[in-house]
Length: 370
Ligand code: 13P
Ligand code: SF4
Image (cartoon, rainbow, N blue to C red; front, side, top):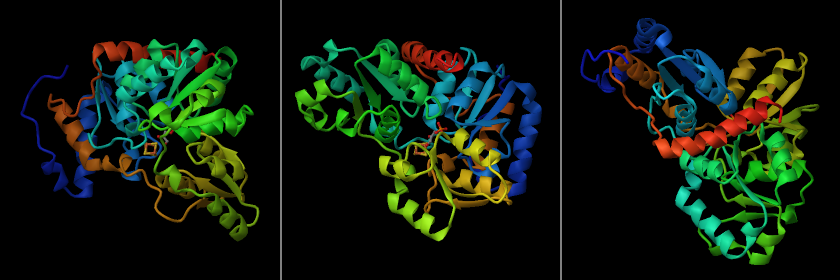
């Protein structure tokens, strides 16, 4: 642990700095902390933050990086559920910091543990749990929901490993209850040929999620009624429009987009898949990409020899991710360098234990290629 040298320095000090001063402050604190700190950045972060990251990745890669780093401090430039996962997977003495506590995820907020436990009890009452039902949660969920999955034979998945994990669970269980992104669940289920009438949506504000007991007994997938407000902005008519406007364009989208958009696209996959696909594409190829605007803009800057469009022209920015500004990063690092921990993300021990079961299960199944 760092020695305590001063009081916490207020964020306001950094808000008044020029851009250059903020950058210099970040670099000075990094130098003072050396290998004791690692800065992780999700691909959707803004340029002026991502340029300071030691390691960048999608949510799966970042969780593995967090489980492997030896640094004392993990400064997470991402959103709250990612920082929680880093705390769960990190060593007990490591400290995880989220530079702005307002960096949440609207999708993760669409399911809370009380609602999930209540839903599970309702399924038990109507006999659904007499079948083998696996609860699977997307990484974009609270630690408490991950722990629920860990306790009940379930697992966490991300957009980059949903397909192989579904493969195992669909072969070994009668049914999956998937939280909280209905679109990733539906799109992944469809890849296994599950017809839409074998999937139902669970609305947490309705009795039995708004379904009949017969339907819940019959279906293969129960999909929590959650979605991403960023990827939800892409509509199927955007795909038609770009195909009309840009001949030979290939449409590449994140599986958090709706079923209709994914069905009309050429390719879909996690943020890393999107990056790799563009990296490997030939010069002159044309792409319309349905994901967060910061990532699409960076790809377009990196590959001027390829024609890259954002699938929808209106603003598709993850506003919560954007809350982590360089000023917040400078503030948290400067305080760390002065022995003060600000904005620590800490999951309680019991939740951590069971969430870790579900996360480690995910990592070992993914690394073993299942
Ligand atoms: P990835 O798993 O592709 O990083 O996606 C995380 C996310 O929040 C996308 O909206
Ligand atoms: Fe959450 Fe959507 Fe932002 Fe991803 S892009 S962090 S799912 S709000």
